[in-house]
Length: 116
Image (cartoon, rainbow, N blue to C red; front, side, top):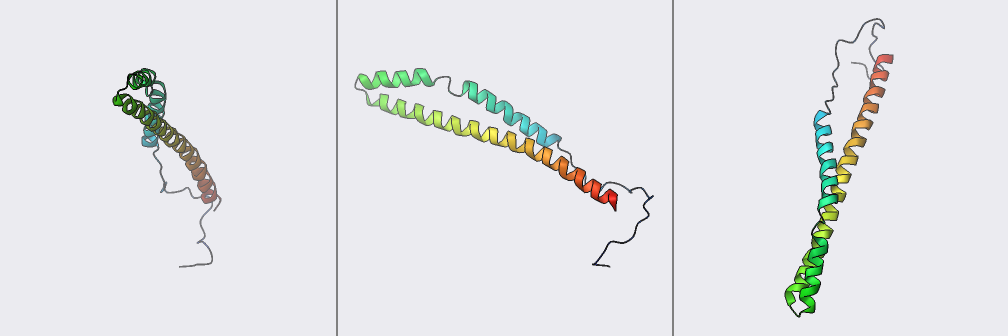
């Protein structure tokens, strides 16, 4: 085994087969689901917020403690939906970046191996 170089290879010989194969169809599906979930949550996740907040305000003005709890729950719900929307966007964007980056890396490795 040589540590200071690579064994010589016939430049006309074709590669015997790829040893690095990436199937990104699963990543694509996950990214697509994250994107759809992001859009759906953004559109529908706060659907009841206005009426819930109004009900909480009305109950509070009538002197009922439940109004404060309802307003607090509405605020917490909106915060959690926002966090989930952000997480879905992060997943989708990260997978898009990873897919593009991996493709560039594979092309670079292929060019380097082909140049040997």
